[in-house]
Amino acid sequence: MHKLLIIDDDKELLSVLDIVLTSQDFQVVTSGPFCNIFELVYQHTPDLVIIDYLMSPVNGGELCRLLKENSATKELPIIIISAYDRVFKSIGDYGCNLFLPKVIDSSILIKHITGLLEKRGGVYA
Amino acid sequence: MHSSYTPKNNLLFRKIWNEKSIAGRSMFTSFLVPLLLVMALMVIKIKFNPLTVTPPYVIFFAIILVSACYGGARAALYASIISFIGAISLLFIPIKLSYPIVFTHLLEAIAFCFEALFLSYLIFCFQTQRKRNKETTSSMKAVNNLLHIREKDHENFVHMAAHELKSPVTVLKGYKQVIEARLIANQQKEEIQLLAKMDTQLEKLGMRINDLLDLAKVNAGPMLYNMSNFNINDCLLSCVEETKVSNPNFEIAFDLISEAAMVNGDVERIQQVITNLINNAIKYSKKDRYIKLTSEMIDQKVVVKVLDHGIGIPDDKKQFVFEKFYRVNKPAVIEKSGLGLGLFICNEIIKHHKGEMGLFSKEGSGSTFWFSLPVV
Image 1 (tube, rainbow over the protein chains, first blue to last red):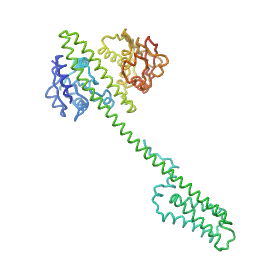
Image 2 (image 1 turned 90 degrees about the horizontal axis):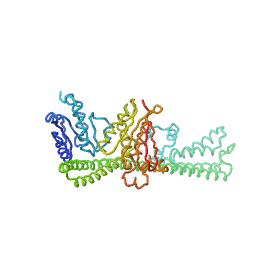
Image 3 (image 1 turned 60 degrees about the vertical axis):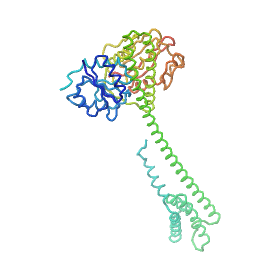
Image 4 (image 1 turned 30 degrees about the vertical axis):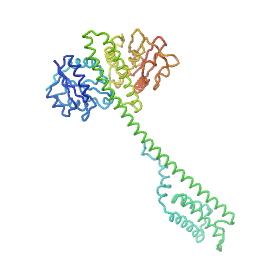
């Protein structure tokens, strides 16, 4: 069973994503904005991370960049979700594997998660 | 935008006519300077009698202008009066001169007086007009700055509002899909249909929020682009895959060129264009639910077409479809909500990529929207 880590400051969205993805046989761990992303990732060892872009006090794009720049976690698939469909892409990619604009369709999200998990290499060095 | 470049003649003018300095001159110095200049002229003329053909009253006019540059219209007025007094005095002071140094007759002196006063008045008008222009420019700059700040605030507000609206809609959609899965499992067909109606409204709400964001982007100015080389066919196939997932009842055919067609551009923006054209084709399709995508090479350009068998566009409306906020005034169009920005934005994106965009359409039969991009 694959484990997903979802980081978002919207508790309702975390709740519904938890229900939807659990029903698809994923193990789901949810978290609010967390500055020390490495602590979170090493604690839960997810197979894929979903991060909301616009969070406070920490920007989801920056969390993604930190993970992608670290040799131990650079292979971890990361999906960024955002209400902004283009803004952050034009100032740099943050290295995410996929960017999904809101409003998210659960079936499309599940399809992308499955695809990324099939493609991924070793997660932790 | 304020430019730091100032032409040379403008710099020279500012050195001759310095409004800041003029405004700072006191009444005493504005009077003293012309007085000294006139006295100096008269002494030079009387004592040294230089052999110059320049009439003295011309030099008086020069003194008025020099005084104006020193102390503005006030100094010019003092210079005019002092010059007149100086000229008149020579008519009545018993100095024996071999020739008249200013005027021979009182009437000439009076005429000079009026001319001098008129010159002072012109300088006054010039000074006043420059002051007014400066005030107008300052207030316009202030208004522009305020407008700019308000526009930025407005743009930020729209973005934040769109974000705040999209998140709960995403949550609603998620719960709708969870409930739908349970209703399907329990075979509650009537409830599933009601849920489908709710989903339609959620879709509309999501699209309206996107329209608001589009409007904010259009108003915000030029879009940013992230350029790279990519295969346009990969882009098309990706868009088709996404469309099939969200529109499983639509037949989406494609006929793409076999070889790789590499273009230089922002892949996300081009996907935005293709997705917009596909969504329009779906939106305005009739019952046959068929659209076709093609790509072909014509004269070192790849031409992409999106064809539908929808309601089509009247001949007299085709020229307007790429304009901002334009929507064809037909019931079948009006009932489909939207702000009329999609094609305008698509056209802007294609123009930025040095491509072209156009359409063929027959009312009642369907439309083909196309765009071309230069290959690399």
